[in-house]
Image (tube, rainbow, N blue to C red):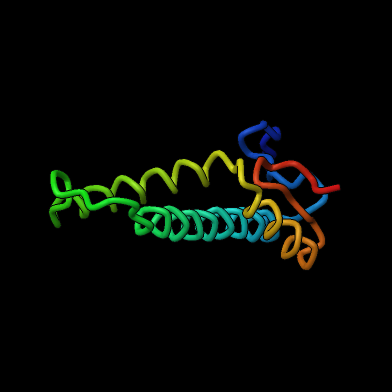
Length: 111
């Protein structure tokens, strides 16, 4: 039987002490945590948009609001990928501890 050498691309993000099934669960957890952070940020940005201080007659059409909604969703997704807010990190620490491998969104071990 031929064994493949472990390359950095094949190593699980959590380290060599977890199995392939656990690495897949950690990756799935990371993806879910980032998706939750994106949804949270979308809601936050949407709430900020609704707090109109003035009436915007020039750009107040429904098509402009639709475009702003799509732009806000993309912005929230990008912000969640950067994990600057730490929501995904907190979720990974909490639920990763149940897997026995608390993680951070950038792939490192939680302290």
